Length: 342
Image 1 (cartoon, rainbow, N blue to C red):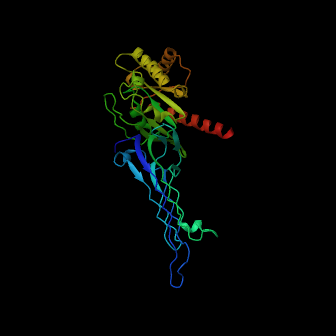
Image 2: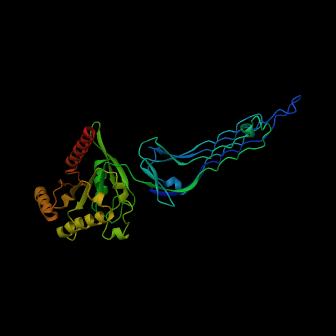
Image 3: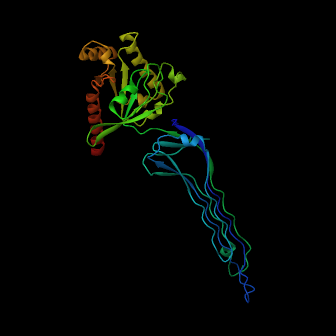
C-alpha cells in the first residue's frame, strides 16, 4: 500500500433542522393553540485517532465528508431527530490545519482521541416557544443555522522514539531490517527508500522502542533537490536521532566526513530545533574495512569534532547493532525517568 503523509479534505457539518409553525386542530378543539416542535441539531464532524492506521492513503479516493442534517420540527410539539455525528478515522500523529489560514486546529497523539473539526448547526425552534399571554397564536418560528464547512489540511507526523538520518545508501534501511521486523526495500542504488518506515526494536522483555527510517537527504535538499526535506517532519517527535554514516564510500574517508557535515548543514536550514536534538553518530559498513573499530571511531570523532556517542556497526552482518540498541534503550529510559521526576 502506498504511503501518504499529507491530504486535503473538505468537511461539512450538518445544518440544524428548522422549527415548525403549526396549530393544534382536533375535534371539539377548534382553537387548540400552537404546537410546532423544534428542529434537531445538525451532526458534527470529528477526526478520531486510530492505532490501526499508519497512512493517509484513504483520503486520496474520498475527499469530501458530510455529517447528517437535523430533521425539521413537526406538529404536536414533536422535536426533529438530531443529525448523526460523523467520525473520520485518521492515523495517530495527525496534525490538522485550516487550509486557508494554516491555523492549527489540533493534533491527535493518542489512540481513540477525537478532535472536532466542524460544528453542527443549531436547531431552529417551533412556534410553541413564542406563545405568551399576549400572543396566543404565534406564527413565528426560526430556521436551523448552517453547519460549519471548511477545507482542512492533514499532515501525518509518525510517532517514533528514534529516527535514522543519513544520505542515500548509508545503510539506514539495512539497519532497521537488522534490528526490527520491518522489511523496507534494500538495493545498491540511491533513493531505495521512497517513504518512511517504522520498526519496533525489542531489546529485552518489556523493553522496546520505535525506530523510524526516512528517505535519504542529499545536498541542496533545503532547496528541493532529491526528495527535498518533506519527510523530515517525521523526525520532529523523536527523542533521539541516529546519524548513519557510510564509512566505506567509493570516494574515500574524506568524502564520508564531508557528507556528514553537509547533512548537518541541511538539517540546520530546515529546523534549528531538530538540529539541536540529541544526535548520535553511527558509523556503518565496518565489515567492508579492515581497520580496527576503535581506530575508525577515533579517526571520525577527530575529523567531525564530535562529542556525541559514536558507534561502529555493520547493518549487513549485525556487528555492533546489539550494543547500539541497548545504549539507545538506556538513553530513552533515563529520559523517561527524568521526565517523571520533574
